[in-house]
Image 1 (cartoon, rainbow, N blue to C red):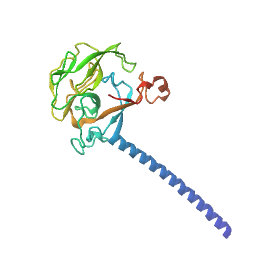
Image 2: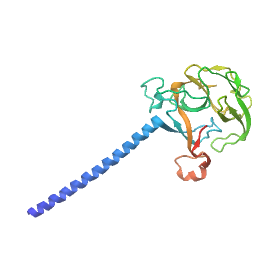
Image 3: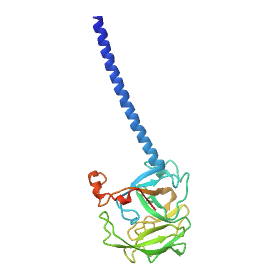
Image 4: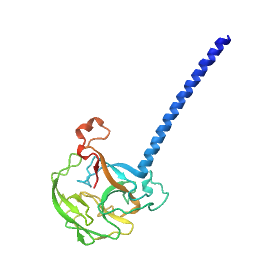
Amino acid sequence: MDAVARQDDKEELSVEEKTETHQSALWENVKVIVQALLLALVIRTVFFQPFTIPSGSMMPTLLVGDYIFVNKFAYGYSKYSLPFSPDLFSGRIFASEPKRGDIVVFRFPPNPDIDYIKRVVGLPGDRIQVRNGVLHVNGKPVDRVPDGTFRADDNYDTGGDVPVYRETLDTGVTYDTLDQFPDSSGDNTREFLVPEGHYFMMGDNRDNSSDSRFDVGFVPAENLVGRASMIFFSLGNDTSFLKIWNWPANLRYDRLFKVVE
C-alpha cells in the first residue's frame, strides 16, 4: 500500500510540475509579446511612424498607395507626437525648425484628428504668393523649368499626361511639381505673411491640393508630426494592403526604400 501511495504522489507531482512548466512558458510568451508591443510603441512615438498616402496632392513625389516612414524626432515633440494626443503639455520640446522644401506630416489645424502631408514652402516671417502658377518667396520667383510630363496609375486618374515643372528653392532644394490646369484657383493668390511659430504648406500637385492657400491656413509648429523620410512599400492599381496575393502584380518595385526628397 505504501509503495502504491508513493507512486501516486510522484504522478501527482509530475502533473503539478507540468502545469507549472506550461504556465511559466505561457507567461514568458506573454512577457515577450508585451515587451515587443512596448518597443513598437516607443519606436512609433519617439523615432519613426508609418503612414500611407491616401490622396494625390503630393504627386509626382508621393503616389497614392505609397507607405512611408516619418521621422518623429526631426522637429522635436509635441502632444501630437504621442498616441491619442493627450493634452499633457503645449508647444514643442527638443524643437528644431523645418527647412524650406521639407515634406512634413502635420495635424490639420481646423481638425487635429486628421493627418496631412505637404511640402514646407514658407517659414515664420516669410512672404508667400503664387502669381500665374509661379511660387514667390519674399518677393522673388522660385526657379521653375519644364521637366516633361507625368501620368499616374489607376490609383489616381490624372486624365492624361500632366505637365511637370522642376522647382529649385534658393537653398538648392529641388523637386517636381504638377501644373494640370492653367489659371486654376490656386495659381494667383494674395500675399501671405507667415506668422511667428507657423509654416506655409503646399502640395506638389499644385492644382489638386488642399493646402495653406486654402482651408489649411498657416500650420502651427505644435501641429508638426514629423518629416517624411522614406518610402518603404508601395502598391499601385488601388490594391489593398491586406490582399497579399495581389502584391506581386501590383508592387511598385522601383519605389521600395526610396528616400523622400
